[in-house]
Image 1 (cartoon, rainbow, N blue to C red):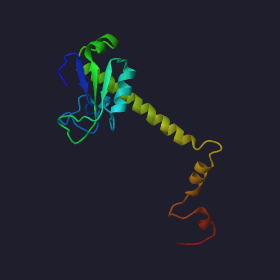
Image 2: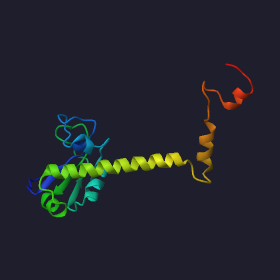
Image 3: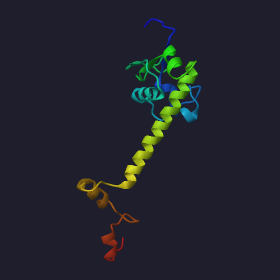
Image 4: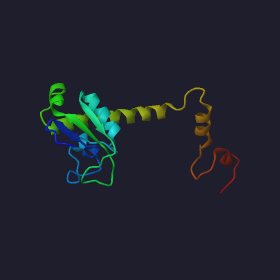
Length: 150
């Protein structure tokens, strides 16, 4: 691709919480996410308010040629108009903070759904939940009640 000074290239690897700053992370730890992917990056950028975005899938970062993570092209003039970001670092931190919050919200919703248990009428989920109720020592409750020993 030819060079266009109006475009900002954003890689998902910039937001990886497992890598160090030296390893390629470009945002602070509190703005980084676990297992970043192109789809999550795109959704976070849209949620921030960026409109001029182009996804490029299957490309690898020059320092990480083994991973085909893809990249996002963001218009810098569009970013300045829509969210008021003057630099690439501002754009990255805004996207990172939003993405981190999205990931936290999704995890909380999953935990809440797990705590609620299976829905009424969901026989398969109910039976799976009840089947594995074991007590300490790996014995079922009926085995202990009968007075058997190990």
